[in-house]
Image (cartoon, rainbow, N blue to C red; front, side, top):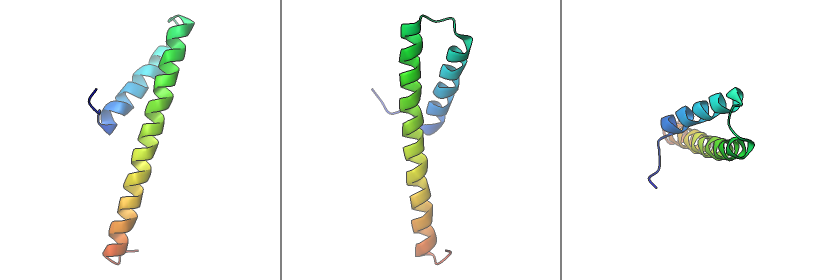
Length: 65
């Protein structure tokens, strides 16, 4: 399975939230969606943390800190 972009992950999380808020899916499907949403949130958090570290490193390299 190919890696999806950060933006695509955000859109998928939004879609999952809508499905969960709707509450019309069977509980097993809702749990599956919830787990997928948590996984995507963690991946996005990791991406943002890595980006922040890159910005800090670039700033230090250019004496902008």
